[in-house]
Length: 219
Image (cartoon, rainbow, N blue to C red; front, side, top):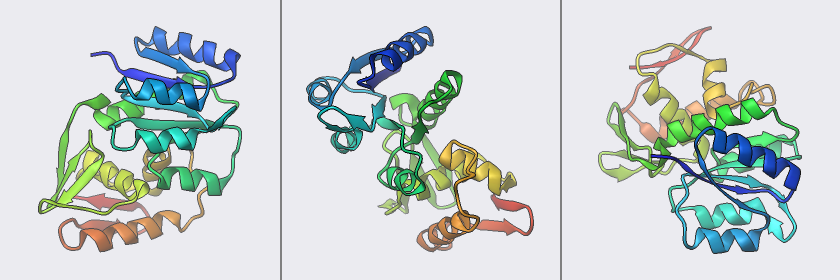
Protein backbone atom coordinates (compact mmCIF):
# COMPACT_ATOMS: atom_id res chain seq x y z
CA UNK A 1 0.00 0.00 0.00
CA UNK A 2 1.31 3.44 -0.93
CA UNK A 3 2.11 5.79 1.94
CA UNK A 4 0.08 8.99 2.10
CA UNK A 5 2.19 12.10 2.77
CA UNK A 6 1.11 15.63 3.67
CA UNK A 7 3.60 18.30 2.58
CA UNK A 8 3.10 21.78 4.03
CA UNK A 9 5.55 24.22 2.43
CA UNK A 10 4.89 27.78 1.25
CA UNK A 11 8.06 28.04 -0.88
CA UNK A 12 6.78 26.91 -4.30
CA UNK A 13 10.23 26.00 -5.64
CA UNK A 14 11.04 23.76 -2.67
CA UNK A 15 7.54 22.28 -2.74
CA UNK A 16 7.57 21.45 -6.46
CA UNK A 17 10.92 19.69 -6.18
CA UNK A 18 9.79 17.69 -3.15
CA UNK A 19 6.48 16.72 -4.70
CA UNK A 20 8.20 15.42 -7.83
CA UNK A 21 10.83 13.50 -5.84
CA UNK A 22 8.30 11.96 -3.44
CA UNK A 23 5.96 10.93 -6.25
CA UNK A 24 8.91 9.34 -8.07
CA UNK A 25 9.34 7.21 -4.93
CA UNK A 26 5.69 6.13 -5.34
CA UNK A 27 4.29 8.12 -2.43
CA UNK A 28 0.90 9.84 -2.57
CA UNK A 29 1.51 13.55 -1.86
CA UNK A 30 -0.96 16.22 -0.79
CA UNK A 31 0.52 19.73 -0.82
CA UNK A 32 -0.69 22.67 1.28
CA UNK A 33 0.85 26.14 1.53
CA UNK A 34 -0.45 27.32 4.90
CA UNK A 35 -1.99 26.27 8.21
CA UNK A 36 -5.61 26.97 7.26
CA UNK A 37 -5.43 24.86 4.12
CA UNK A 38 -3.71 22.07 6.04
CA UNK A 39 -6.42 21.95 8.70
CA UNK A 40 -9.12 21.48 6.08
CA UNK A 41 -7.20 18.59 4.51
CA UNK A 42 -6.40 16.94 7.85
CA UNK A 43 -10.08 16.89 8.78
CA UNK A 44 -10.92 14.62 5.84
CA UNK A 45 -7.74 12.63 5.09
CA UNK A 46 -5.54 10.23 7.09
CA UNK A 47 -1.81 10.65 6.49
CA UNK A 48 1.06 8.30 7.31
CA UNK A 49 3.58 11.17 7.38
CA UNK A 50 3.49 14.95 7.44
CA UNK A 51 6.45 17.06 6.30
CA UNK A 52 5.88 20.47 7.89
CA UNK A 53 7.64 23.77 7.29
CA UNK A 54 8.02 25.47 10.66
CA UNK A 55 7.48 29.03 9.39
CA UNK A 56 4.23 29.51 7.45
CA UNK A 57 2.36 32.65 6.30
CA UNK A 58 -0.48 32.18 8.80
CA UNK A 59 1.19 30.28 11.62
CA UNK A 60 3.66 27.48 12.33
CA UNK A 61 4.17 23.82 11.58
CA UNK A 62 3.88 23.17 15.30
CA UNK A 63 0.21 24.18 15.19
CA UNK A 64 -0.44 21.54 12.53
CA UNK A 65 1.59 19.00 14.52
CA UNK A 66 -0.65 19.51 17.55
CA UNK A 67 -3.73 18.69 15.50
CA UNK A 68 -2.09 15.60 14.04
CA UNK A 69 -1.43 14.09 17.46
CA UNK A 70 -3.59 11.05 18.02
CA UNK A 71 -4.02 10.54 14.27
CA UNK A 72 -1.10 8.09 13.90
CA UNK A 73 0.78 10.51 11.62
CA UNK A 74 4.56 10.78 11.90
CA UNK A 75 5.99 14.30 11.52
CA UNK A 76 9.20 15.64 9.98
CA UNK A 77 9.85 19.35 10.49
CA UNK A 78 11.59 21.49 7.85
CA UNK A 79 13.14 24.72 9.08
CA UNK A 80 15.88 27.26 8.49
CA UNK A 81 16.46 27.46 12.26
CA UNK A 82 19.41 25.25 13.21
CA UNK A 83 19.19 25.72 16.96
CA UNK A 84 19.74 22.94 19.51
CA UNK A 85 16.95 24.18 21.76
CA UNK A 86 14.40 24.13 18.94
CA UNK A 87 15.56 20.70 17.83
CA UNK A 88 15.22 19.26 21.32
CA UNK A 89 11.76 20.80 21.77
CA UNK A 90 10.64 19.37 18.41
CA UNK A 91 11.66 15.85 19.39
CA UNK A 92 10.20 16.21 22.87
CA UNK A 93 6.88 17.23 21.30
CA UNK A 94 6.80 13.96 19.36
CA UNK A 95 8.42 14.82 16.01
CA UNK A 96 10.03 11.90 14.18
CA UNK A 97 12.72 14.06 12.60
CA UNK A 98 13.94 17.63 12.14
CA UNK A 99 15.62 18.73 8.90
CA UNK A 100 17.29 22.10 8.41
CA UNK A 101 17.30 24.05 5.14
CA UNK A 102 19.07 23.88 2.80
CA UNK A 103 18.91 20.10 2.72
CA UNK A 104 20.09 17.39 0.33
CA UNK A 105 17.12 15.84 -1.42
CA UNK A 106 18.47 12.28 -1.30
CA UNK A 107 19.09 12.62 2.44
CA UNK A 108 15.53 13.84 3.04
CA UNK A 109 14.10 10.97 1.00
CA UNK A 110 16.16 8.52 3.06
CA UNK A 111 14.81 10.08 6.25
CA UNK A 112 11.24 9.85 4.93
CA UNK A 113 11.71 6.16 4.18
CA UNK A 114 13.26 5.56 7.58
CA UNK A 115 10.48 7.31 9.47
CA UNK A 116 7.80 5.41 7.54
CA UNK A 117 9.58 2.12 8.16
CA UNK A 118 9.96 2.91 11.86
CA UNK A 119 6.36 3.98 12.29
CA UNK A 120 5.10 1.02 10.31
CA UNK A 121 3.75 3.26 7.54
CA UNK A 122 0.43 3.28 9.38
CA UNK A 123 0.41 -0.49 9.98
CA UNK A 124 0.52 -1.78 13.53
CA UNK A 125 3.63 -3.74 14.45
CA UNK A 126 4.15 -4.99 18.00
CA UNK A 127 7.71 -5.38 19.27
CA UNK A 128 8.67 -6.87 22.61
CA UNK A 129 11.66 -6.10 24.78
CA UNK A 130 11.79 -7.82 28.15
CA UNK A 131 8.48 -7.09 29.81
CA UNK A 132 7.68 -4.21 27.45
CA UNK A 133 5.43 -4.30 24.38
CA UNK A 134 5.78 -1.54 21.77
CA UNK A 135 2.92 -0.63 19.42
CA UNK A 136 4.81 1.09 16.61
CA UNK A 137 1.72 2.35 14.79
CA UNK A 138 0.37 4.08 17.89
CA UNK A 139 3.82 5.14 19.05
CA UNK A 140 3.14 3.75 22.52
CA UNK A 141 4.86 1.30 24.86
CA UNK A 142 3.28 -0.81 27.56
CA UNK A 143 4.71 -2.47 30.66
CA UNK A 144 2.47 -5.29 31.90
CA UNK A 145 -0.41 -3.71 29.92
CA UNK A 146 0.18 -0.34 31.60
CA UNK A 147 0.99 2.57 29.29
CA UNK A 148 4.51 3.92 29.84
CA UNK A 149 4.81 7.69 30.11
CA UNK A 150 7.71 8.23 27.71
CA UNK A 151 8.94 11.36 25.99
CA UNK A 152 9.45 11.19 22.22
CA UNK A 153 13.20 10.71 22.66
CA UNK A 154 12.76 8.03 25.32
CA UNK A 155 10.34 6.20 23.03
CA UNK A 156 12.75 6.36 20.09
CA UNK A 157 15.56 5.13 22.33
CA UNK A 158 13.44 2.19 23.48
CA UNK A 159 12.49 1.44 19.86
CA UNK A 160 16.14 1.47 18.85
CA UNK A 161 16.99 -1.14 21.49
CA UNK A 162 13.96 -3.25 20.51
CA UNK A 163 15.04 -3.26 16.86
CA UNK A 164 18.59 -4.30 17.80
CA UNK A 165 18.06 -6.85 20.57
CA UNK A 166 21.28 -8.55 21.63
CA UNK A 167 23.43 -6.21 19.54
CA UNK A 168 26.15 -3.95 20.88
CA UNK A 169 25.28 -0.39 19.89
CA UNK A 170 27.83 2.40 20.08
CA UNK A 171 26.75 5.82 21.32
CA UNK A 172 27.07 7.11 17.76
CA UNK A 173 24.80 4.40 16.37
CA UNK A 174 22.18 5.10 19.01
CA UNK A 175 22.26 8.86 18.38
CA UNK A 176 21.86 8.30 14.64
CA UNK A 177 18.70 6.29 15.31
CA UNK A 178 17.31 8.83 17.76
CA UNK A 179 18.18 12.05 15.96
CA UNK A 180 18.54 10.85 12.35
CA UNK A 181 21.63 13.01 12.05
CA UNK A 182 25.27 12.94 12.99
CA UNK A 183 24.35 13.95 16.52
CA UNK A 184 27.20 16.48 16.49
CA UNK A 185 25.06 19.11 18.23
CA UNK A 186 24.28 16.83 21.17
CA UNK A 187 26.32 17.29 24.30
CA UNK A 188 28.31 14.24 25.30
CA UNK A 189 26.22 13.49 28.37
CA UNK A 190 22.81 13.83 26.67
CA UNK A 191 22.51 10.15 25.76
CA UNK A 192 23.60 9.11 29.27
CA UNK A 193 20.82 11.24 30.75
CA UNK A 194 18.12 9.75 28.51
CA UNK A 195 19.27 6.19 29.17
CA UNK A 196 19.19 6.89 32.91
CA UNK A 197 15.62 8.21 32.64
CA UNK A 198 14.55 5.25 30.52
CA UNK A 199 16.05 2.77 32.99
CA UNK A 200 14.14 4.44 35.83
CA UNK A 201 10.84 4.10 33.95
CA UNK A 202 11.45 0.50 32.86
CA UNK A 203 12.68 -0.74 36.24
CA UNK A 204 13.69 -4.41 36.21
CA UNK A 205 11.58 -5.24 33.15
CA UNK A 206 14.39 -4.44 30.67
CA UNK A 207 18.13 -4.72 31.30
CA UNK A 208 20.04 -1.98 29.47
CA UNK A 209 23.64 -3.11 29.83
CA UNK A 210 26.47 -0.60 29.72
CA UNK A 211 29.49 -2.01 27.88
CA UNK A 212 32.25 0.18 29.23
CA UNK A 213 34.09 2.15 26.56
CA UNK A 214 31.94 0.68 23.78
CA UNK A 215 28.24 1.41 24.19
CA UNK A 216 25.07 -0.37 25.27
CA UNK A 217 23.36 -3.70 24.75
CA UNK A 218 19.86 -5.00 25.57
CA UNK A 219 19.13 -8.74 25.39
